[in-house]
Amino acid sequence: MAATDPGDASGTGWYATATGAYDPGLLDLLGLDPALLPEVAPTGATRVGSLTDAAAEALGLPAGIAVAAGTGDNMSAAVGLGLGGAGLLDHPVLSLGTSGVVFAASRTRSIYVLTQGSGAAPRVVATLVDPADRKTVTDFAVREGRVSATLLGYSSLEVPRCCPDQEEQASWRYQGKAFVRTTGDLARAV
Image (cartoon, rainbow, N blue to C red; front, top):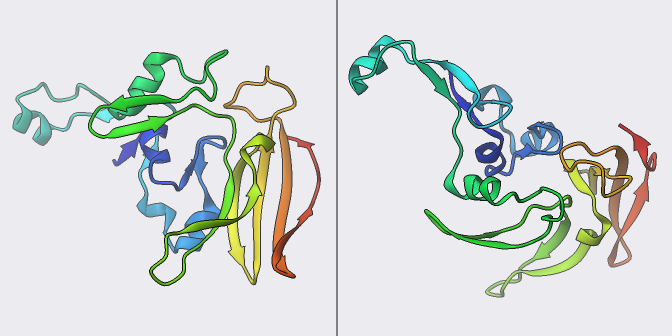
């Protein structure tokens, strides 16, 4: 059985921590078969199986001992620092583990439209969802000239960041040199 934890799964960019699942719209957009991806255990340290006889012999360990999902050093640092807890949202941290990473726990994600001319550096030409909007983006898709996404939000700062309680369908079309947004059901409870 192949298994991973939410921290490593989110590192792929295909897993939405807000929904606790791989993003089907993004997988479809990339042409990835979800059946090929590992199961995501609810948390690191969740038992995902037992050590097989062959693995036990190769490792010199007893067969049948518990095998748990792990997580990376940078994600472990975030947990150890209490990021995401009360008062510790949006505080950047520099972690010099296996790589140099600057990260912060945040309730929000953004959508930016980038462009890059021949030989030029990429640049942001539009912000569709601004971090100040405090929305999490899921079900992101680009089809038939339209960008669409489900925006998850929070009715107050007291709502745990794992559990958004508002949902909004949004889409954008490029019209007249700008992206124009249309909105579906605003702030529907989830």
